[in-house]
Length: 139
Image (tube, rainbow, N blue to C red; front, side):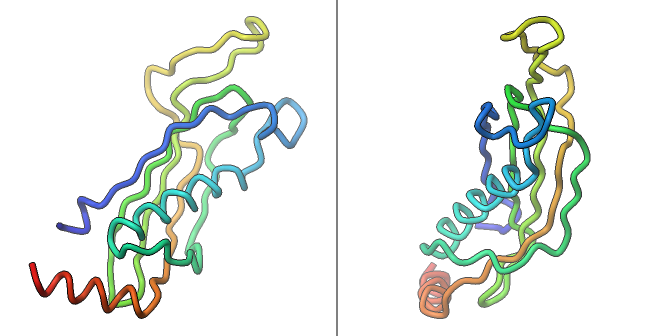
């Protein structure tokens, strides 16, 4: 399987328990938590092990996220070496809470809005990397 085919996706509603700041604003760390779950899925798919997210090379928050918003987060494996997997992440708001219209009002966005992007590296344990190399060799 090509690395460009290794993609993981989550769609999650941000709840009031995710709001950390005034105006029901969600903490950026909540989006990074979604990215962590996605990179774990990619590591399991590619190596049969959860791996360890060792770094973010870049993180850019590009828009606000509020309680009630729906976020779709995507991770894509872009580079792979023996022990490291480089992954690009994006999070888009696809449904927006509309508290200005009522306490339970929401709106499906005609175009998803980018709220965060990042690049991260996960490290695979040597034992799992060896198992993956052997499996690749047998294919």
